[in-house]
Length: 377
Image (cartoon, rainbow, N blue to C red; front, side, top):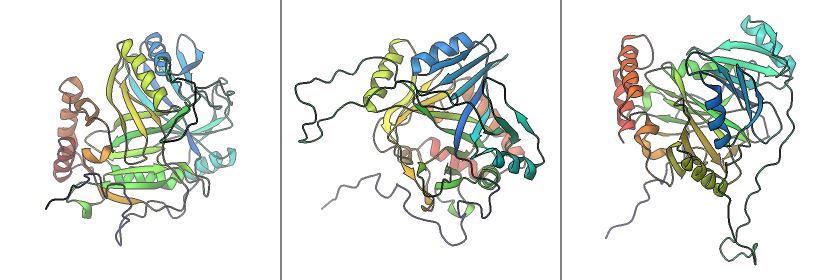
């Protein structure tokens, strides 16, 4: 007699650390950031970037010859800042401090200067670099853009419920309005060192760790990291990091109101010739419903909805890392999403892999074998 087995059973990270493993938080962090503020990019064609941004669901809050600010419907600073440049590249992340005092405290601890941000943003910043070389801004006192009208979630007749009577469901095929910036995912050749830097300097805490199958004793290779707001719940991850052969931006995620908004917005993007990378599905870590797209410059961006919220009391979960742990339902991860689609980007990753193996970092032959096993699983 056989029994059906759910391949996703026991994959939700409830299993905790073993004695001596990484605790997932710093003992005495310098400050505790409250959230991501915005992401910064450089692109050669701001008009093309703005056209995609509108289709994706952003609202333009500033557009000049040399700079583009993209916002969501929630009150706050812009979600994305794009500056004109000769090429396309990710410039860095800005995190929001609790107040000016935390910015000053962090500057004093790191020997860096506090500087004023441009008038369009307001406030102050201390600019740092993490061990992987990524620029990290910690800001406070920035201008608060007022909230904009957003999309309302649809009313559902769930099961035998009758919340909707004498009314049909007709989601409009229109851009799925971005509400806010949710998280950014980065890859590092020095995962452990870089992770510890964020925990120590920004007071972030790990929600879930993942390790390569058969390599748990060598430590985690992926961390889903949230802001520590004490008893106030925060997103399951505001920053996610994985060990890999290069230091690079992986993707960023932006919240929308619900699945129908996401699906109708996806049809809108497809109608205009944009490339879906992977979706629609539901993640395991963070539980978000997701839909991934490539912008015209090749950057991976995500619509998400219905994510997990954790307070400071939850300790990290631990589990092995594989492609199947990325989703509960939906299509299998694509070669494009996993970064193994043949082309210029995969050739660059191959060159960087060879270079990483020659350098003194955490990405060695054992890690390469684990990395390839995940990508092809």
